[in-house]
Image 1 (cartoon, helix red, strand yellow):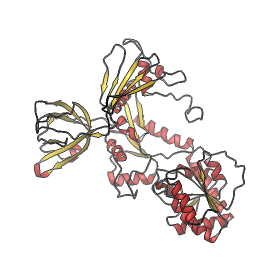
Image 2 (tube, rainbow, N blue to C red; image 1 turned 120 degrees about the vertical axis):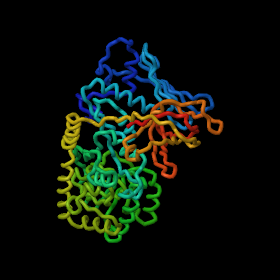
Image 3 (cartoon, rainbow, N blue to C red; image 1 turned 60 degrees about the vertical axis):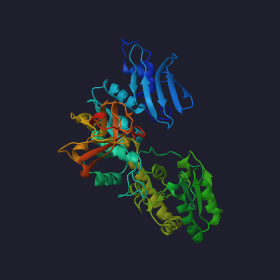
Image 4 (cartoon, one colour; image 1 turned 120 degrees about the horizontal axis):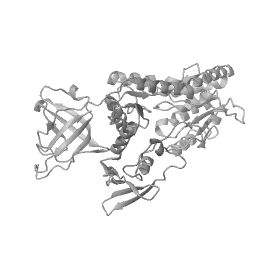
Amino acid sequence: MRSDERLAEKVQVLNFFVFYSHVSRLAAAEEFSLSDAYVSDVAETVRRRSRYIGLTGMRFNEYFNSEGGVFAQEIYDAAGCVVSFQILMSGQKPLVFKTREEACTAWLEKISGYCESCVLIADASTKSEVVASVSSDRAHKVLTLHGNHFFPPYSFGSEVKPTPALIIDNMKVCDALVVLTNAQRTDIEAQFGTSFSIDVIPNSFAGSDVVSEKIRDPKLFVVVSRLEPIKNIAFIVRAFRQVVDSDPSLKLEIWGHGAQESMLRSLIVRLGLSDNVSLMGYTTQACEVFSRARASLTSSISEGFGLSLLESMSVGTPVIACAANYGPREIVDSGVDGFLIDDESGFAEKILQLAASDQLFLQLSKGALTKASKFTPEIVTSQWLALIKRMLVGGGKRHIDSSMEFVNTHSTTFGNLFFEAEGADLGSFSQYRRVEILRVDRTRMFKETISTVEPGIYRIAKIKYEAEHSRYCLWISQGQRAFDGVVPKGAIRFRLIA
């Protein structure tokens, strides 16, 4: 990342495995500086060895430091879920966790202890739980959403996908959620309210100094995209059939690989477009491809942002796009730097219109360059820095733990915990995300079976009130696994944690 200037020299990097690989070699009383564990060209070499445990399908991983000592161990069950993670340090008791995510949260807690105040950003959508579970008073927590959070048809009112739903739920204990577009912020606030802060910080694009060896072809249109169903490339091919019917001299190049490559090849042949539409394969030179074309075309059903739109605009190539949530309708100003069209006939009409008018092209090309200039790394970096400064100045959200302890009041074979809380309502429980199981009574049985759940902290997968029984019911999960075993009445004592 440093070699291609995506990471500045003054920015230091910490890695979970490199950190504990280094710490594992230190004597218990030996002083440690955080800078000693920075990733560098001479950083710790971490090696992993995996083996399967008999015929169980379970896998055992060991991680070795640069001296050949084991510093971490993890066990995967047959379904591929981590069920145990241990960190081994010289002269100390092992640190034992149920999942790797729990271990990562503990690591972030430890790292934050070296700072007066810090900001933790979960850039990967799958790591929101890791960051949200940090309870250090020194840590401010920021979560991110990089894609459309809805299931098809990807618009307001659709069901929310599980991972984005978890991110939004984790905002109960985090300080800011960063999304890429204003439209997505509007939809989230309309559905989930404004009880947490949402910042809009788009992707950036540095622009391109590409100078194509070929002159821009006024009859050439291009697509640079993954050839996957959500990209809807068949829409463009069908629209281009109408284009060719009006102007047989126009050409379309489709760049990219994907699951629909064979289908698109057949569609091109079936529509009689073999002389006009070409599948070009994968390219690493998107800007050069865009710079040769009259316009780029995109027809995605859903986008998180649409970085390729900026790549095209950065070389003065207008974009003709479908108005999908969320990127195109926010990046493209129809008639200024491109066009937003949702039907095949209209799409074909705009291609023909742009191909026929040099004046229109020059107007849209100028607008495209202006638009791209609003998304430079300098501008986007300043937005991130403003957010971080705001976090450091203001107080962060703190975990609220319930002092009340509950005991499950009914038996079940489905893993859910029933409990009674007189005078409470679901609203009062909405701030809680996790359950700490304090004690499991193995002497209690239901259908001659004890509960196999272990004491520890678990995610609240769902909670509801059953009015007909005047009781609450909650389900717990750990990582990707939901607990669905036997719970005898009175066997589990637990409390709620934010």
